[in-house]
Amino acid sequence: MTLLELLDKCINENLKDIVISSPLKDSELKKVRVRVIKLSNDIAYQVTEYVGTKVIHTNYDAVSLKEKLVQYMQGFKQAQIETTSINATVLVSKKGTTTIKCKQKQQIEKAPLIQEHNRTKEYILKEGISVPFLVDLGIMTKEGKIVNSKYDKYRQINRFLEFIEDILPSLDSNKEQTIIDFGCGKSYLTFAMYYYLKELKNYDVRIIGLDLKRDVIEKCNELSASYGYEKLNFYVGDIASYSDVESVDMVVTLHACDTATDYALYKAVNWGAKVILSVPCCQHEANKTINNKDLAPVLKYGIIKERMSALITDAIRAQTLECKGYKTQILEFIDMEHTPKNILIRAVKKEKMQAKVADVSKLQEMLNLDLTLCKLFKEQDNEECN
Image (cartoon, rainbow, N blue to C red):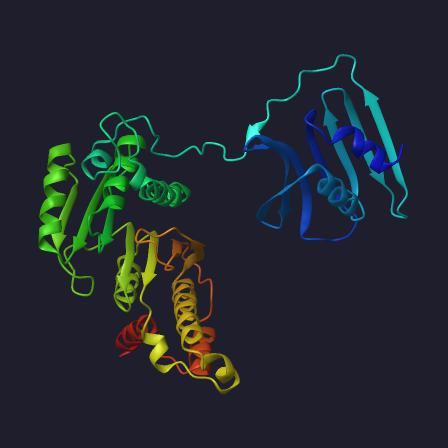
């Protein structure tokens, strides 16, 4: 039996699973998996490629899938194929010789239940369970159903909680943890943090929301009091001048405009925050001065210059945090205002310096930049030396 003959026999609604593994050569593509899915009223085959840390899904029809599988087997040592009636193994030697072992099952199984393409995602705040603050903020009905027009916001809140779930080991569950949310606005995420950490995870948390809009702060305090959230408080104030606490365990700053993000990160580091979560916005500072003769052909286009300035600003912020002893990641975040500003900087305190200050300074010099966060730390270092 040839490989194509085997695939002709297996690629149909009775297919249960295909796993292709063991690359012949060093490759980023480590494994391939195939499953049958339902698209509208027809079936298709979803191929999942495991490329480094990424997982890539692509759908094929039966004919295209067979061609793709033949291509895959030119770079892999083996494949396991299971249908309702057979188990097959495909082995490829270093010389390219293909061996096929096919075994009939003693009892033919029922055809597998074909899964819908869009499987229901498990959210941290589950639909069907009424959450008071989601109801009052108009995202959920009293019966726990998500309002259709607010579904994006519901997903975004859950996405944010997933980031917090990842850093839970960095927060001490045995003592009160102080968290500050700079520029909290209507506080969808502030309430979500408190509910998740206090109600669902039983952490002793004190959360402070800070914003410049007095009417919004008053409304948030009314809601917090009505839920009995004694340690969730909101105050009018700005990022640069706030000094009512001496130490903070986690700092959150979402869509703080331009250099306001820098002041929030600066304060977070000086408070010794264990965790920093920041979604920057409106990075205009670099756009005013960025210049490099080698990049001139690229920077002459306004929109490219703007986007490069924003990305470089956030990369320098991340590197600066690493210089201060934080393990820092830049992650994709679906933001709350449906804008392209969807990068989240997540920094976790590790004490040991993760990057060199000289490298950051060299990069700034090369691009004719002198960004606020770097200036703040430079001024602080000079004061400490005098």
